[in-house]
Image (cartoon, rainbow, N blue to C red; front, side, top):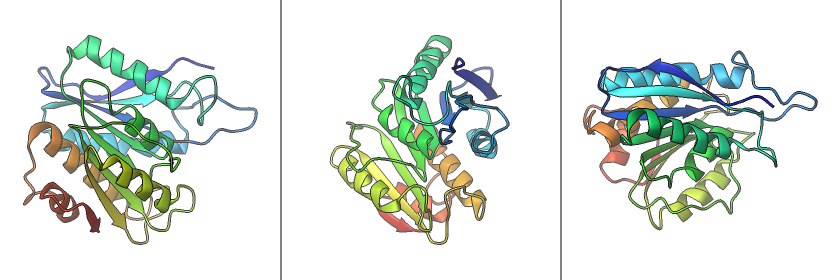
Amino acid sequence: MSEPRLIETRIPRDPEGVVLVFHGGASRKGNAMVSPTQLSVLRMKPVARRIARAGRGRLAVLRLLNSVRGWGTDVTPLDDAAWALEQVRTRFGGLPTGLVGHSLGGRAALLAGDQSDVRSVVALNPWVYPTDTVDLAGRHVLFVHGMRDRVADPARAAAVARRLARTADVGFIEVPGGKHAMLRGGSFFERAAADFTAASLLGEPSPDRALPAVGQVLRGERWVTA
């Protein structure tokens, strides 16, 4: 097992908020190491870059490299997320923080969303258990799920979204034809994460300037089809 790492995408001189980006990636028999070049890690680089652009120099954006692949029993992506949040808190002094994760990283983002500095959570094709629950009161939460995802069941994500919506501001965008890896139509997932995170932390873009489906969520619609 290696140590978790934070990789900088953009660090402005005086950021107004911080965004942590979490990758997915299932465990591999005989190989628990996380590589910076594995596809699940690389897939989050354009997501992080898009968030940095949406932040217009006002958001610090960092990617977390987990200590192990998958969701183990001794250490999990949630443990790594807690470590990353503590690092951010120490470095940036408790700035409003957004979490964005894909697959298992989406689950980690949701379950870590109750940390004190977190204001926004985006879960992209999250791999979740139907029983996952956490109190995200006061947070803005967005699920973006491809309806042809055969790895992370959209129905499970929908069940979790409905449960979280009892206490939190939760939106769910269904992406017809979207698959787990976010390759086909990947720019939609990237921009949805970026627009929602920037709007939640900075108030920009406005609903009228955001991606239409995100704009609908920002206006108060809870279940949207892209």
